[in-house]
Amino acid sequence: MESGRTNLKSHLESILFDQSQIRARVAEMGEQITRDFEGEPLTIVAVLQGGALFMADLIREIHLPLEIDSISVASYHGGTESSGTVQFHQTKMPELDGRNVLILDDILDSGRTLSAIRRRLETDCSPKSVRSVVLLSKAISRATPIEADYVGFTVGNEFVVGYGLDYEGRYRNLPMIGVLQSEYISS
Image (cartoon, rainbow, N blue to C red; front, side, top):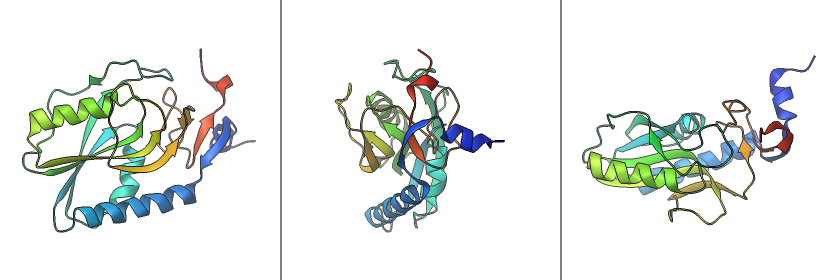
């Protein structure tokens, strides 16, 4: 009998980054962020749910006074392409007045989500500074021109899952990042 993880792994067309590659890159990013904010406290605002695994690993690699908050937004609504609309799932924003803020998200593709969050935090929360970190950045033209300050890996325009990235709530628990086979994507 095949285990659930093995079964999910068999749904991948290819593995782009395995667990050891992800760990190594996250450690490098943590070192860079630590250097860039040296001597300054930092507040990470993680975009849930996809950013949760990435956040858990990254914060262990950042050696600074650190606070954590989260924000819940949606732009996919179950499909494989952004709907073009970013919905905030909470009305109360984090308390970030005068803080250095690092927005953490799993993937940057259209740019709409990161841009909307950045704009909202800057206007509603009065932070000292706002930067962003993403695990993956798609090498595509963005609907909203924005780039992340820190990028783990650059990928093509494939639909990727694993390490927090999902399709209809599944595949987040895979320890690697891979391209989902088209037969497992509802049309």
